[in-house]
Length: 215
Image (cartoon, rainbow, N blue to C red):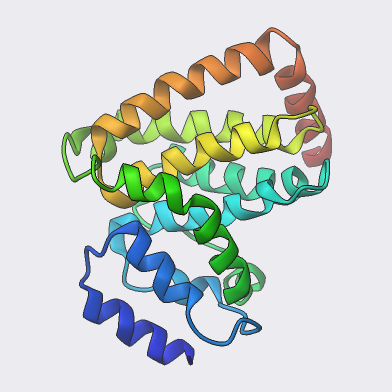
C-alpha cells in the first residue's frame, strides 16, 4: 500500500476514526515501507499531538535497557514543550518530519496494544474537552510530558514499559478527545513523577544533565 493509498483509507474511515482504525491504516501495506511523520500526522488537526505521542512512545517498548528511553524520551520532551507553549499543532524539524516508523513497527505496536485498545475503545469517547483545550490544561499536560520524558530518558531499571504505558494513556486521551481519560493520566503522571522522580532524585539529575547539554 502506498502512502497515498494510506491517506485515502484514513479519509474513508472518517476524520474522527478511532485509534485502532488509524493504527490499522498505518500498519497495512508493505511491512518494509517507512512512513514519514508528516504523512502520519496529516489531516489529524487537534488530534495530531496524540498520534505523534503514540508514535514517539513506540521505542519505549524495545526490550533493550536504555535504548528505548534514549529515543522516546527526547521526543516526548519535544511534544511536551510545544504543549507548554500553547502550540495547536505539533512542529517537527525537517529531518524528523521526513522520517518515521516502518509499517511493520506500527503493526507490532498495534498488536501489542490490541487487547487494551479493544477494551478502552468501548469506554473512551469525546467528552470534557475543556480538559484538553483550555490553556491551563495544555500547560499542565505539557509539563507532565516534559517531566515524564526526562524520566524516560534515564536508565531507571524496569521503568520503560511503565512510562511507555502511561504515555500511551496520554496519547489515547488526546486522540480520542476524552477529558476524563486525561484526568486519569494526570493523576497517574503526578504519582509516577513523585515516586520515580522526586523521591529518587532522578528528575533533578535529568534536569541538570539537560541544562548542561544546552549550556
